[in-house]
Length: 364
Image (cartoon, rainbow, N blue to C red; front, side, top):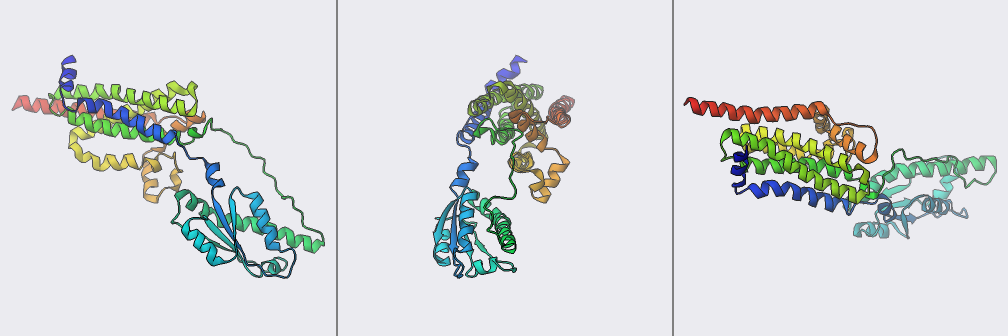
């Protein structure tokens, strides 16, 4: 229906409906994938404040040996403080990210049989990365220091000097290695861009076609998403492959988001056709909760209970898993049943509504 497309081109929102989804795909993916977080760099810039109040008569102080062990085994930077107040002040000012305090009788208790209480101080007012790491430190230090003290006490019983060797050595293997630093956040970026472009493109297309005659409107709302989502997915694929240097995956990175975004666009447009922009009350949260529901940032089981329940009813995380499967060449496929169902419902609402309204107009 060429006349339908001509009517659409005369709309004031024509350019916005075509260009904005492409711009979103370019801007969001470009800014997120050209400056990805480096976990190793974050850890190496985490600064641990250590306060050694140990005043035992044992020489060398066992606390000093423990501090040296910590400094060698962890990727963090270390800052030593004479008093707890000085360490707390440094934590308040953000000069350190967490503080560990060895008690005055640490060395004496280490050679005895009683348990030792080592205090750790953290704060949630620092960066998200520092806060997340500091939350994990208590269990890490409890395990590491417990192993250190257990070896020391065992050596004392055997009347032998403690061994500096770790009793357990880890043989680490990475099953699916990221090709580049940008590969890690790529599934999240792809998933969020897919949902965001589908939502924004649908809103603009819905508004741009409101004044078109009914059947022509249904035709435009069916055809245009294929074009605009194809273009935005192409831009997304170019940015992802350029950032990750995984050019062999280009066509999959283009075609899969294209399919998903078209199905979502048809569903959104169908809902808009029935209830108008009130549909944003449901669609907008669904889009912005994808950081949790998609399973690309955190496992779905780690989400709040009500979101986990939503994700159990509707397998949002299957799309995120499919994107991860493309980037890392692991197992995972799209939820074709759900996507085809969403597309069918959207097209049914879109065409069915306009056909019904057209017949009602002719009858009256």
